[in-house]
Length: 292
Ligand SMILES: [Zn+2]
Ligand SMILES: [Zn+2]
Image 1 (cartoon, rainbow, N blue to C red):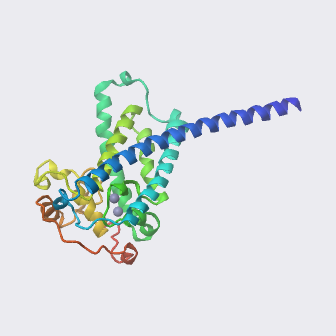
Image 2: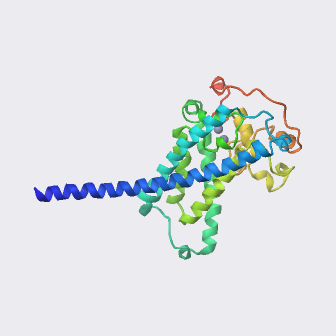
Image 3: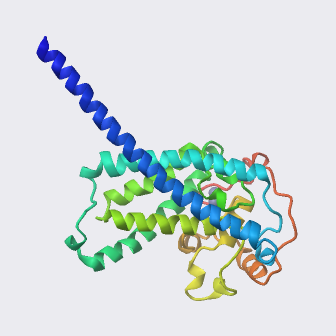
């Protein structure tokens, strides 16, 4: 009897310790992802939507600005997304860590390999996002998973993490995919996450800051721009890519008016204010599905 009680007590203590550790790691992950989001989106929002609002207006993709309720909705869903990111982060980097291909000693594979992993994560995530994004635009899935993100038909930096919880899980699972494929160092993942939020905020910026004619440059045309992603939010179809236009160009899903829109915006003559459609009214008629 004493033995049984001791076993139960020790098990409870061990469980509490594990739970405590997991909670600690979860908080840590949440602080990291939250800091990244609020600093990146907050600083950029303050700069472009407050300080440089008038100066940068000619470079606004859609001349209208989102309403306060749009910012509030985006921040609300982003906060939920960040809790989910922290959960997937703990599962991947703490619970499943021994089973992943992550390594701690940079010298194990050398510096060249370490730098190569950035290119690897970049293209892996680019492909992962494009195809999961296409799946989420399937008419039967869109309303239940991706509509929240598309409520922002005129996105702002706060839209970066504004996902339905199911979409947040899908987005977060890229770190699990990264951890289970080629070996990556934890610091490389951390640096990649900084890049990720930076480019994500740029994609939802609502202003185009890239140079004129980048869309026609032999190399520049392969990079995704704020105009391209803004058009995706506005029209609900085409321009599904993340970092590059590689998959959109290969699969024929670049918006036909992309070049025109990019040139108008970077020449400072973007369109006049538009009445943005209610996403609910666009379902299912204008929601593209896979293969179109
Ligand atoms: Zn979409
Ligand atoms: Zn978006």
